[in-house]
Length: 207
Ligand SMILES: Cc1cc2nc3c(=O)[nH]c(=O)nc-3n(C[C@H](O)[C@H](O)[C@H](O)COP(=O)(O)O)c2cc1C
Image 1 (tube, rainbow, N blue to C red):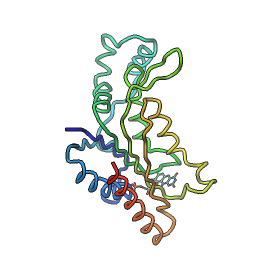
Image 2: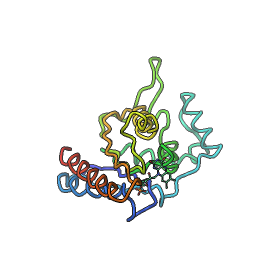
Image 3: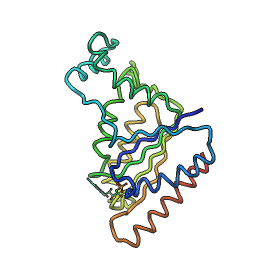
């Protein structure tokens, strides 16, 4: 069996527009790929470890080119579990709304936890090298506003950020479906949501 890690970063459950797009995607994806199990990581429901002083100390040990030892290793147990869950996945699906032009804080916290040197990337004399290679990522988002125009694109810190940060660990095959605008009138909300659901289904059919 292969594993699709589904990372959820909205608290809105059945009300979530993002998760409506996700539902369309998964319906088609699961019918086409029964060999995949879905590992759902709900960042709202799951308590993520805080980056305490000791845990951050561990990061500097790794940045110094050494392995974790002693109590730092114990302090990192939960972080390592999250890293292994991520690295043990064959494909990634992120369901996230736009919050304040970028990602919600729980997704940022997850990224701060898993993006660790020697695990997801490493520094070499010629630059940064990603350690998660040849894996696809699908990002399904919804936004209250519209970020397709030239002016809008300048304010979209969500898509470029996610491409940059996951690109750092070697994930460069990333496809976005963005439902937008969602909060600029009831009528076009429904049309735009349906459009994104169709786009997500088409994408799933091509995978
Ligand atoms: C805390 C918060 C911040 C938001 N910030 C933005 C924003 O910067 N730009 C935007 O277009 N929409 C913003 N929105 C609106 C959501 O992106 C939009 O309603 C989205 O469809 C919600 O997705 P969901 O239903 O899956 O949670 C914000 C919503 C919340 C709750």
